[in-house]
Length: 130
Image (cartoon, rainbow, N blue to C red; front, side, top):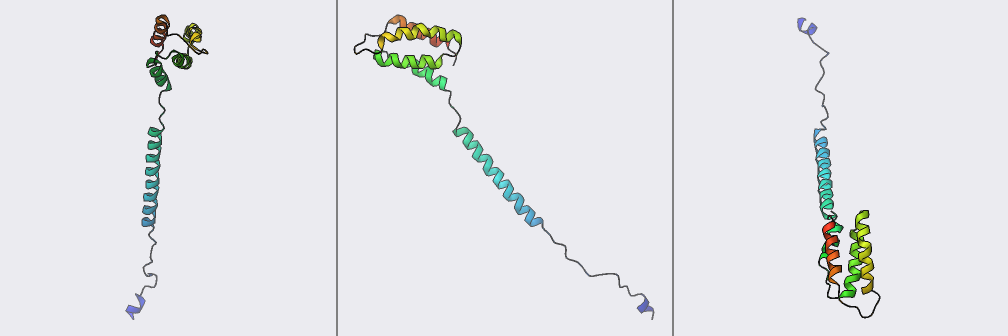
């Protein structure tokens, strides 16, 4: 009889606890993968679309101008002088230059460039900061 009284009815069997840690791990890995791919994409895009300094290109084109063809050189010099001039000082400096280049434009036969005009263009190039 004694054994019957000591019988405990409150203890229940083992309950299975759901373990979702593997699902959370997979989600974290996928999220990390997408962040990594996005970062690589942005870095590639940044370096691919990195703008070149257009002023340097204009400066180099003006520096390498072929003065043997006066008509073509006058058009190109006018274009690059206008693109390079930013400050009021530079803009005021190129006005007489552009007027001096007008004599080489709009004509069928043109003479060769003056050394004075070449020197002024060189002075302007020294003045411009690239």
